[in-house]
Image (tube, rainbow, N blue to C red; front, side, top):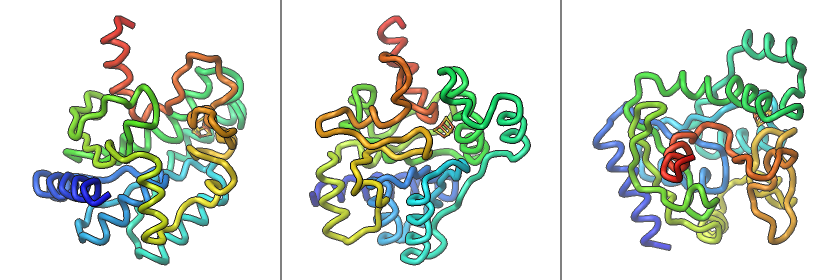
Length: 236
Ligand code: SF4
């Protein structure tokens, strides 16, 4: 565990040294996100922690934001989608458009997640993510530092070598806050209508956009670059 912590802190420090005020952490408030927030605050790295309020989050996630505020102060910078774009989308295509087709779901993710994040990343040089290799096949070859061709930034992945077990061991040992839905068999938590609990042994990503056809990639588009290069590698 110590080597994982040292490795993550060292990469965070490196990112801060190289990029100064032009590095941010895009946090999904997952358990590994809680670890990163804890490490950033403990080591006084002053890396802004961005998180998205899509407007469709579960109440448990809002409760977690509150607990983070109580424990760490105003560390979270909450991003919101453009109100007019959301209004146009739901008025034209329905409030629950994401259940209608993959295309509709991607439209919703683009308006509520990808665009606000893209806007927040403008002018930055680098961003930090909480992605881990063990999360899915698509993430098995994550490097510590990657070039992000979509956002044209350096992308740092300090949690890439942590397993789910490592993350929970740190969370328990340091009594970190976490989303209470994890105690109800939710693994990967996003928006309320697009997230469900999974059964024992089921792929964690099966809890997201489960109605989509097998073979559709269960990603929201925030990390599309590595998927695109993987498809290119396979000639897809
Ligand atoms: S996860 Fe669902 S509700 Fe959230 S932005 Fe994507 S499609 Fe919309």
